[in-house]
Image (cartoon, rainbow, N blue to C red; front, side, top):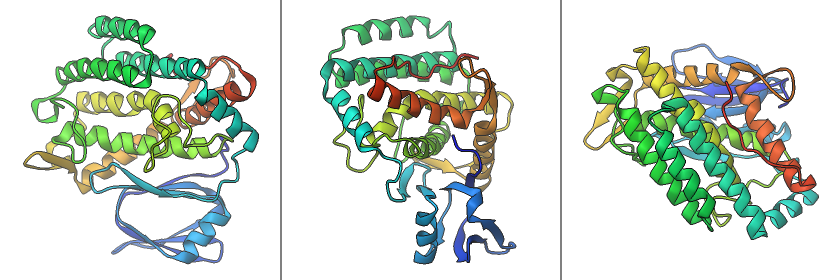
Length: 326
């Protein structure tokens, strides 16, 4: 992934203003921050953010996307620049692959298998060995995306039960819930998943792929980017479940990091800042890449995944979705 610029994270309410070729971040009771626009790759707004048309014009000219998270931490939407990386040749090849039942199903199967592999890797290899074996058998005989997603859902439920055995009572998931999350554990998962989705969207838009043509999720999605839903599946366990277990195990998450009410929960201001800082640091962690013979940041893995799918559509090279190898 191009590394000259970086992601900026906005964790408290602010206003973004423009001054020449710089962005000015204004916060109440805090000094303004001036950021040269050439230093910015994209912006993830985790709190209320105000910006005007002058800022939007500058962002569009420099191809800087702004991703917005909702009150509960779900992905709310993005201010996206014009499509300049998308290639007609690639989009046509991508569409032909998606419309080929055999080719599309093969990709969908591999995505579901890799997602479950990663969940098992970060949660518990032994306790999830049997559910994973069942999923693999289901994947082999599935003939549609709906069947594959059903098999994935069954495996996920087993994984959530195992996760709860490793968490304190107040942080347990008790099943997955969204919009709004019912409890603190779900609030954490939803928030980090929203960030992961936003980062994958940025990675996809750096490639010639079209974000609306998918293989597992429906390409008829109108409010979300279907291909991003596909690719983010493999990376959510790396960040969401993995960090939840780690931060709980290290006693970093406290009850005051969440605001809880009857049947709903969300990160508090201090909790949001802690989680965003942790996720931001995690994206910068590097690992030795087995094929490239160099260290790559977790953030770059998202871009490399999108490139691998690009090559598969254009050149027919084998596509092997991301699996945690370390």
